[in-house]
Length: 151
Length: 164
Image 1 (cartoon, rainbow over the protein chains, first blue to last red):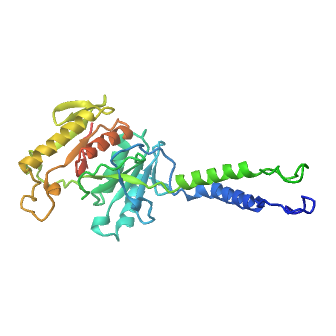
Image 2 (cartoon, each protein chain N blue to C red; image 1 turned 180 degrees about the vertical axis):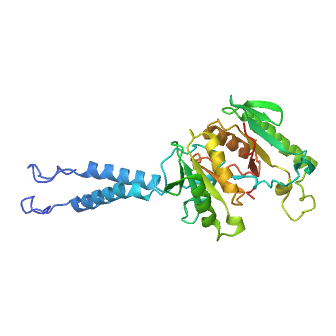
Image 3 (cartoon, each protein chain N blue to C red; image 1 turned 90 degrees about the vertical axis):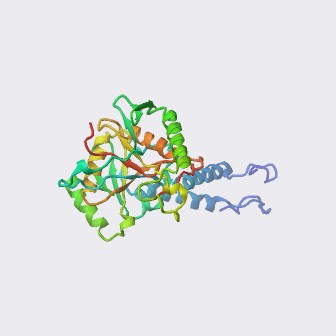
């Protein structure tokens, strides 16, 4: 449709209409898919932490992530469950892991009372876990303070 | 730029250049936001208490550092008051100073005194325990952990028994 105007003369501009079409479609796909990509529960993590260490294992499918959003419920990955079921599931999930990989990640909202977090910690340590990772958002653009390497 | 051609006649095309500009910016914003790298604080928790264990035989380690947070958000390192949750600078400075002293005095972890094959930094006793009341917000506790990690503490242990 772009080549009909100009009374026979050559049109010297690129026809961008198809590109715009494709881009709009891409944009819409992105907008629709993004909420589904989020793997876990919506909560406000602690922000702007200077010394949190990056750990890509948090997003791995095999890692155990317990979320505690503000509503005071507990979620393992995306599934809500009570403390007892949580214990059983955590034990099952970590049964086949090597000793040094046995770590439970806790994502908790900032407004959650520390007691709730302690309840979860108490539950997982019954299953022989003694290391946890408290998930937090790192402050962007700040070089990590090189403290002693993690054990 | 779309309106110059056509020898004086109006060209029946919409000028899409600004639209593309905006779209490109939006796509770039999306690309930047999506792959946020997650990060975490590693913390140790005590293993399950053995009810038959004789606690009275355990000797307290003189190098133990405990940071306690009170319900009014004041911080304490062992017995000394050190600023508040929103201003943990004093605590960080004191911890850093303590670790520096230990480095000079070669105050090693129990069992690490002779482990000369390990780097010096790993052998210094830098364990810090955090004790916070249950009523506190989780966000405040994490702020304190951030400050403690910033001072170089490793590992950080959470005290979860007998919390007020």
